[in-house]
Image (cartoon, rainbow, N blue to C red; front, side, top):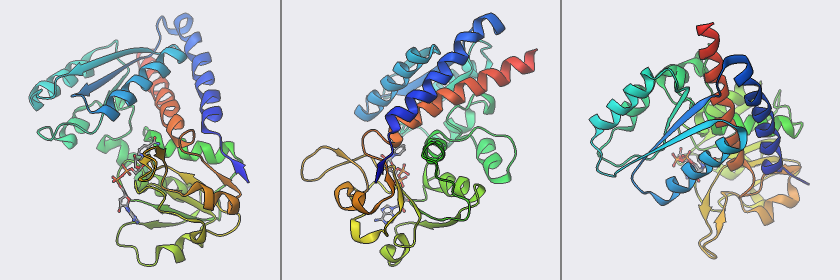
Amino acid sequence: MKIIDGKQISAALKADVAAQVASFPALYGRVPHLVVIRVGEDPASVVYVRNKAKACELTGIRNTTIVLPEDTPEAALLDRIRSLNADEGVDGILVQLPLPRHISEAKVIESISREKDVDGFHPLNVAGLWQKTPHLEPCTPKGIMQLLKATGVDPCGKRAVVIGRSNIVGLPTAKMLLDANATVTLCHTRTKDLAAITRQAEILVVAAGKAKMISGDMVSEGVVVIDVGMDRDPDTGKLCGDVDFDSVAPKAAAITPVPGGVGPMTIACLMQNTVLCFKDRVSKKA
Ligand code: NAD
């Protein structure tokens, strides 16, 4: 059994981004600039936004973090995004989700210029994924595909099972696996006899947000397991995944740990997307 080391794989990706960024001042006169907006003090969001700033520092990407109060009116946030869209010195804009309830996430996502949408959530980027036209890929699914590639797992012809159909993880991951020629089954809360389906998986991606819901008896020998979950273990209170690592790992050919699997890949992919946005913008100006 191989543990898929997301920390190590993401460090290599970030080193590659850093090398590219180091060459940009001589080529283009500046480095990419990522603006991250956080509204309110959601504790998980505080940590995520801080980690994004740290990754920018490591890769040489310029970062501005804007923190707005919880009661910021929706119109004020949209105005702020509009001015960042128009700002020639900004390459990427990310609004940390979830937003306070009085703000429409859909409106906010749509208001970000498609060219600066480093999260890949804008409707035009989503359409690009489904229509196979140029687009920015969402960071977590992109990270999952890169983990598989770095592990030497080619999805072509394999039975892939994805648990979870969210717009940010499950659904785009299923589409990317399909585009990589896997035979994909997408499971969700209404799926009947989940274990019968997961036992058929050669690649199993779990993004349900339910601590340790996949146990050893639900998988077959030789499965490759990608655990996206970031949950609290109800017994210990510690961070854990959707997969019961102790019972699944002995049967798996390869498996991601939590923490240290998908999480660091998501941030590395955000850095890659920021560089893609930057390159796209500077090449259009040239
Ligand atoms: P979500 O709540 O939006 O979606 C969960 C999906 O799982 C739903 O489609 C639901 O139908 C399905 N589901 C829930 N319980 C199920 C069950 N018992 N059986 C079958 N399907 C079930 O969540 P999300 O935003 O997609 O995130 C999923 C998990 O991934 C969460 O733990 C989240 O914290 C984590 N996450 C991690 C990263 C990362 O970078 N590591 C990024 C995003 C999300």
